[in-house]
Amino acid sequence: MKGSGFKVKKLIAASGAVFAMLAAPLAVDHFVGGVFSSAMADSHQGNKGAGGGGGAGKGAGGQKGAGKGGKGGSIEDRVFRAEPDEDSDRPDWAGVKGGKAGGGTKPPGAGTKKGDLFGDMVVLVRDENGLPILNADGLVQVIAFVYDEEGNVVPLTDAEGNLQVIPYNTEGDLLTQMVVDGTTYSVVPAEVELGRLSVGRSPEKVLDKALTDSLSKLTGEFAVVTLDSTGRLVVDGVTIDSPLENLALYEVYMSTGEIPGVTLPDGFSPASLFAAAADKTGSIIVDTVVYMNAILGIDTTKTTAYFTTYEYDRSDTWGTKTAVVLVLQDDGTYAEETVNLYDAVFNNTDWSSETVGGAEAFAQASDDYLQVLEFVHDNAVR
Image 1 (cartoon, rainbow, N blue to C red):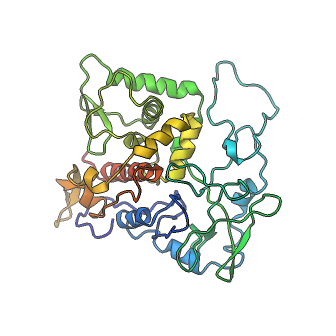
Image 2 (image 1 turned 180 degrees about the vertical axis):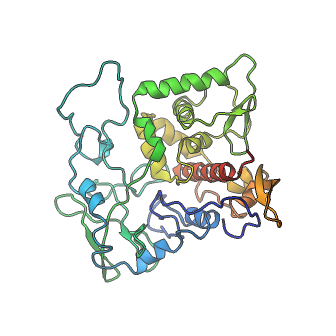
Image 3 (image 1 turned 30 degrees about the vertical axis):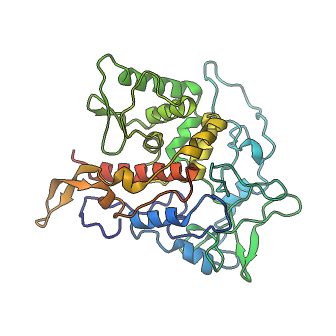
């Protein structure tokens, strides 16, 4: 949170959940509607403070040879020629689906588990609607990452700041090294960490119960539904803060375009539901949203149409929003103050989509809701 005039109890630190890949601006001129944009990277640089900064620059300019002492092994073991298993997260387009392993059967009443057939989820080049952009051979384009001097996984760029794609060999396997601007780099794909969003892979009955619980509150006879300062749904003054309930509400909204029986308040966005289901200290990118939608079984034709028309402007959303938090006073004590969230969280740094609608706008909105949620949570009056 660079330049903020607020001395709050705990500043937002840079998150390592997405391998510090948004720590510096990145040019993506040769990627049409790809995962990253320089604007999205700039916004993270503005609202997440100095922690983790400089990662991308070091990855692009200084990482050579074999990288940091074999740290890519675990990723390579799972991604390069990995065998899919019964717990695979592999999307349909990523190759042959794995069969069920032996060793027993599902306990009675366990229910259907979502995400059974998905393998390692890695950061890809995507179009404006979040769909993977395939290469000439019909294979997904995996963005190249390297280890910087601190051991962070950061995106590899050329001298002009353009992201790089890991080449395939003749057998269709990702290479472990590639040459950029005359320098050889050891490269790895970056896995998308879902954190507590992974609960979406639980048996369906888990989310079904969470949905029932949340709807019982939202549809009560005299229920008054509003929004709190972070954009989350509030019923009669009580915020729905359960990550599981928010994920269940997100699933039903993205599947049906509504929350049944609920008149949603002005300013509601499903991006706030997604954020409330995620790790407060994490980050949300396009891949996070797309993989979760697939795991939840949300119809991609519906989400594609939704993303096509979804627009997000940070200043319009947060410019006048406020929250009551504890602020450090000159005498060393903390006092309640009302702060402007656009200033306190985003340092008055705007963001708006470079295209009309798109998955990137939804992912950025979700991530912004997440940053606001973390800020308010860490500094809330209790």
